[in-house]
Image (cartoon, rainbow, N blue to C red; front, top):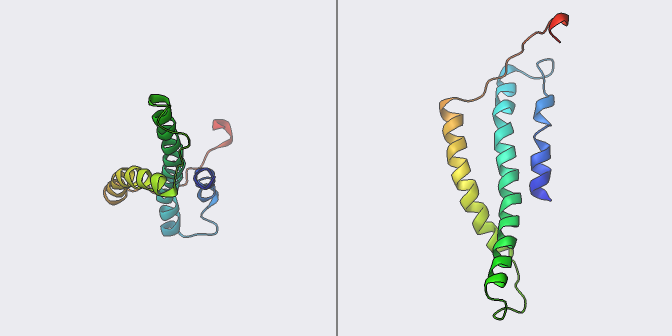
Length: 111
């Protein structure tokens, strides 16, 4: 649920505009959107993946297991791997070519 909260929470920075915030703040919110989304995706996917992996263990050898428990540590290990890989890509993107906030005026005929 936390991961989905962050995935959905990426819409909040989209509501920021130049009437209330400076361009520097708006640039930061533009670049925060992918970071928030990837964090939410990593939390959600690591939990689901850990549970599916445990189910696959049961399907491969059903006589070996009566009950399997997916511990938070199992999900956290997967989360660290996923977020580390995505974090490296996002860090490079943020450092080399960050998103910038730009206002584009649209006339009535273009809508």
